[in-house]
Length: 334
Image (cartoon, rainbow, N blue to C red; front, side, top):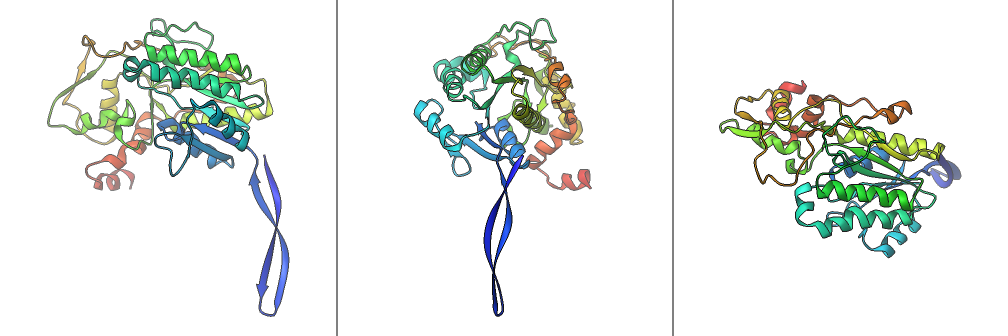
């Protein structure tokens, strides 16, 4: 889906001037990505942009200079943004996604995770709106969870994302919700993901450290999620009946301890200093579901899913820039 416009150019050669017509490629699929400064938003922005979409990313505190700065809590600003850009698709990534932060700064988190959803959805008439949600809408007591299973979030983060889903679908019935689990990918700093943050513990081989070995997780690569989002967007432009709740997840089940060991193995680093912690300490922050595994058959039946990149390969791509010794890259990649 693209347009070709005609552009007139003047060609100069010695003793001759000629006016010629050139075909100019102009993509006419337009996508707006909110939260484009974040871990997943950056991957989604990149995926659409490299696949011939006219892509506009917006953020807030970290937006400039690369992205447009827009306060999603400002209804007028959101209205002007959508009217000016006229996207065919909106991928709504912007959220407060840190459960412990949501627990302690609930009002601010609800503004972004719930009220901004309502604002966007009200302005999205005629636009395919894709909302990124979470496996934390489930309590983790009876996995795996299908798209039609009843949510029962344990913490305020899960509750806020579930309310965001409801606002999206209430104000924009043609929208879609994509629930995903714990994410990792190309990070600006290792603390940006609950997976890559384990890197510092892996590298501090001289000191032993304990890591959670209770909660079962399914680490999911942001580049894979981004490809799914593009598949859904392109399908929705052809088939407006694509709507409702979808799940996508990595397939490798791991505790954080097992993730850390896999990271160590991927970089040929020792893991003997990593100690599995098999009981949750008291007062360890917001309650997390034990195993919120997502069942993803709806995407698969529609041919919109993608095969996940294996964890060790994807984590190498994500973390090698943070190696203390960059000579390692030569031994592994060559």
